[in-house]
Length: 103
Image (cartoon, rainbow, N blue to C red):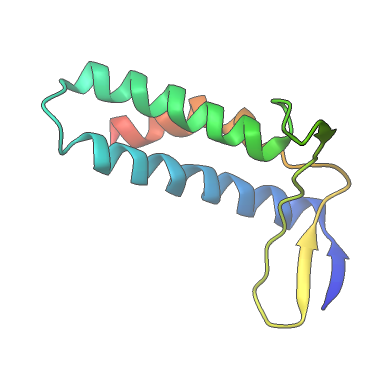
């Protein structure tokens, strides 16, 4: 596989990925007896923390060694799309939450 740096497309993909992540969390929480306010708050908090872990905004280590996850996307079997740094998905969570719960 070859690596392709495309910040604009990557940014679009990570925004959609963050939205889908929140959708999945919300769907699971809606099966509980929680009210909508609690579901929104938990969806936000869980989604934000998962995104921070994927973004390397939260420290992650294995046996004392710091690990930096690098998220890539692929639309074919030959190319991995990346950006210049780890993802910044956590920056989309609050805006996506507003969109998700207003629809």
